[in-house]
Length: 176
Image (cartoon, rainbow, N blue to C red; front, side):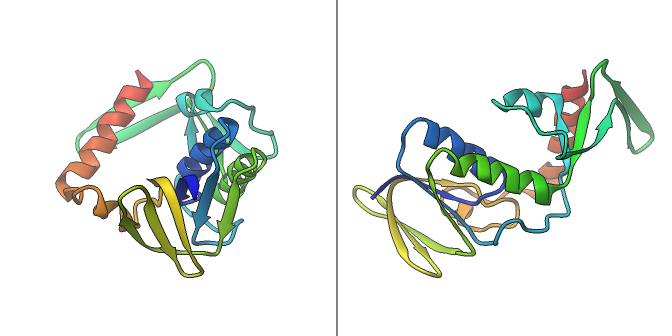
């Protein structure tokens, strides 16, 4: 019986795993891909994101510094600039693997190449069925990313008309 089972080993799952491990929780992180794995998206880290890390990123992970940006939306645009970097660009393959290793250093158990097929809520735990095994956890954190479907077992699907605007609004808030 695990205290926590994390489904997904990307940045949010690995970060949650690192936090759980530091707090002494018996934690299992399950990731369907083998790491390092190719990930073509999301290689920009904002200064806020970097401030949430409790460690420095090695220079070898940073591919480029971004001091300013201009975003167009229909007939308008907004510019953002900071004295320090607005964002850093990283390879997701390298960055995600680095975060997963930081989580593993805290003593959590990490299974890669194992896909979660189903979650079944029991009286006092959650049963997690994978391609390889069945695990029991007091809590499960679903951190599977945008393409995953397990999250719909606990919340409704997102409305497509809300997705683009929410992202753009969040971006505007981060550069002010």
